[in-house]
Length: 342
Image 1 (cartoon, rainbow, N blue to C red):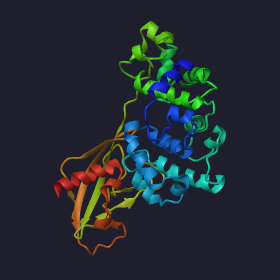
Image 2: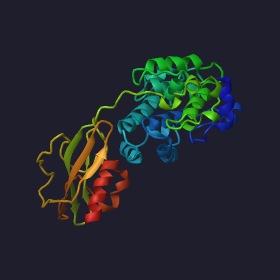
Image 3: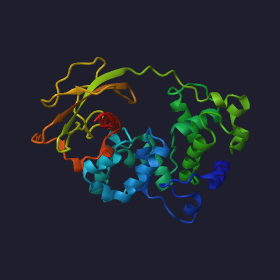
Image 4: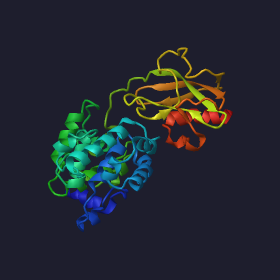
């Protein structure tokens, strides 16, 4: 850990939610709110994708108290495009619990953190280590890769998760555990990369068992992924003559829960003949929208209709209030296809 921390002191990534090693040594403490927010955003998402969202959120809601007071729709709109929308719903729930039950302050220990909405074993460990410098073992994909190579472990993921966590725990120091947790993640992100690891630059070069065995590039091993099924559906885009559009808010539970989107059919493995949301002269747009979620591929037929301004259904959004950027990615794809044809 000493060698890795020396490396981290000179090579730590600059991230908008991070307190640098030198600043931390000078007494600047990480903001638990910013650490929590970044960790929730980073779940199944890349650092590059998260940076802009993080800066937007912290500009709109600088503290957990600000976020707790935000309108649900505003938070969901700001999250649009980042995916895995249950995270945004839990973000609000968690912020409100912290304000209501913890006086606006994050608990400092892992067990209490893990009792909060949307915070699981990894996130609780990350917040406890990085924000509060507790000696918790933080294991993400980068850390799993580093440990598999360091110890030359060939048991495939996900079967090796327990062993990799135990190995990571055996190295977690009592001194500077927050910096150490970030150092291992940085090592995996910048040096011990999935392809073509830069072993000559690694601070653990001399002790890495996989480097000595010549197996580093092959690790970690993974079980073959199951083929994703394909689902089909129909989306309806109604355009009113005054520029308003027909949108609906999806149920809180389920995929894209709580987000605005175009009305449509269920997404199933066979294309059904759905019932349109309103009576209109629906015309099919040439082509289809394709999108991939975690567990399936989606192919959508898109129907469009122009309706008169007297259509006053409450789900019509006035032209001046319609912001395509507030829609989740698949719904933006639908709008882009329609806009290109109308």
